[in-house]
Every structure is written in C-alpha cells, then in structure tokens.
Image (cartoon, rainbow, N blue to C red; front, top):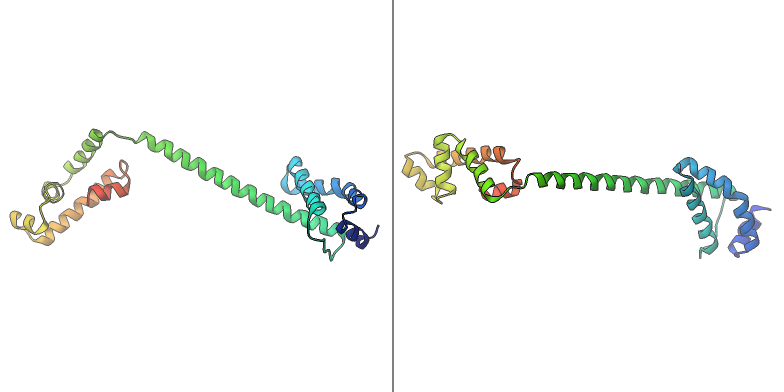
Length: 188
C-alpha cells in the first residue's frame, strides 16, 4: 500500500488499515525502541502507546516523510523523553535517599538540654579568660558594651572585638552540635 493512502485511511480510523500497519511495524519498532531503553517491556509499552495515540488521537496525522521514517523518528523521540524521565526519577531517588540518610544521621546527634548546656559551657570555658569574661557579661548578664568597657577599664572597641572573637570560636567549636541558625540565635 502507498503511504498517502495509508495515512488517509488512518485519519479516517479505518480498522483494517490500522491492523495492517500495526502488525507490519510493531515488532521492528519494538526492537528499535529496545535499543534505546534497554527494557523489552518498556519498549513494547512505548510502541503500544504510540499506536494507541494514533488510533484514538483527535488530530489527523500530517506526515511529510515516509510512514516508516515518521514512525521510527516519533518513537526515537519518545524513547529519548522516556530516558530523560527515568534519569530525573533516578536523580530524585538519589536525592531522597541522601536526604533520608542525612536525617537519620542527624538523629544520632540529638541531645538533651542538659547535654547541650554542658557542651556549650565546655566551649565557653575554652575561651581565653578575658574573652570569656567579656562574653559572659555581654551575653549572659546582659551588660551593654559601653558599661563593660567602663567596668574593665578598656575601650568599647576592645569589648566588641572580644565578643566577636568569642562568637567566631564558639561557632567553630559548636558547629557539629547545633544548626547554625540556632547557634546564631543562642550566641547573638
């Protein structure tokens, strides 16, 4: 049969012509698609879906090449799109698995409040004495920087520098124990 006649009859939903085309091309198209997707069942599904859309599709087929070229090109594109979809699903699966692993690992780092207080106290006690004194006055006793400077006989700038140094060191020492946002909140 000539391609123009077949296309015309497919557009008219001629069942006999459709069955002829399906039986004529099906196995070759499945083998072709299988080379792309490397899964015989998926290849058959893609080819069957392609023919299903030809049969129930509301649009008419407009083919400017041979019917064979159209079928193979269409199924090549469907195979490529399928593989892209598989890749996205695999990436999502890896991302989900990695996220799940991180969540499970973070559960290992759950602490009770007394344990966290002890860890924070230990980190504060590692600060140099003068730095620790200024930090405690500022953060735990609520004394403003100007008053600390006056009480200790140092400049306000020195107080600010000591507090900044303390915060930097505590962020480093406590990074494995608390999320950064919580550290910033606790140590601001």
